[in-house]
Length: 90
Image (cartoon, rainbow, N blue to C red):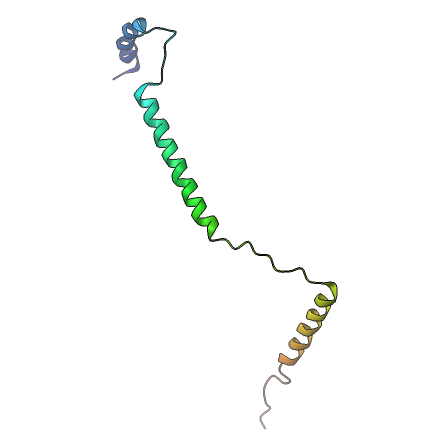
């Protein structure tokens, strides 16, 4: 169906409509209901995913504890280094 044919068919119907009484009709309700159902499902999914998140924070470290842990990690890295790459063969 071409647009001109659709306009010719709809023109007589438009004269019968009351200009002060325009409603979205059944199609508008169906679209709104589908959108509301989609939003409800998204909120339910978001609630499920947010309940899996752990919001507990680790306690803040003091500067002395931070310095001590960095010193310990540097000592551990020197201990784990190999002293020689490979034994020499003669």
